[in-house]
Length: 175
Image 1 (tube, rainbow, N blue to C red):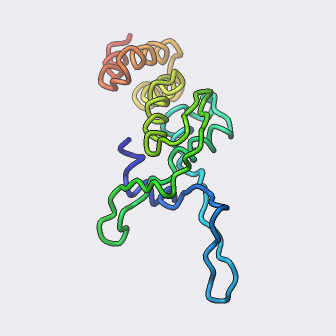
Image 2: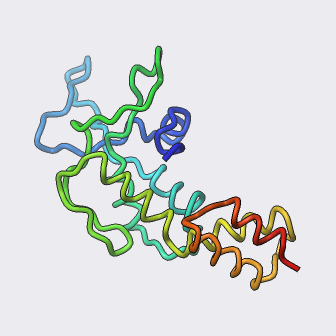
């Protein structure tokens, strides 16, 4: 949640501009009288949270999941980027339609709760337990850590609801 709402992350991955494509309103007109490009959906943060923060590249998600996650985070933006640069949820730019992420349906019309549910779903996913555990073992044990160690760490991750301290304890006390 901290990364999803952090202004630096929102800015760096352009999620602050990601919004539901709106074909029901006329596009803005430029100074030459031609329509300006419409803002739309940006998949950068959706892919980042799935691939680098939680499930990993082989974590079992599809391109449709990337798009659905990106849709869930529309409207997550930055308030007054030049002065305050604080997280803000803008319901006017959020995709309010139903979404399906990793086979789970996010009902229509819920706003910011879509993103919150995606974060919760990803944090509890078995692929996240394995991905995070392997990363920790690679950092502290070996580039190719024993699968049995990663399995034990992932089991601790799952049993403790993602308590990193407990996962590290499992690793540090492992033979």
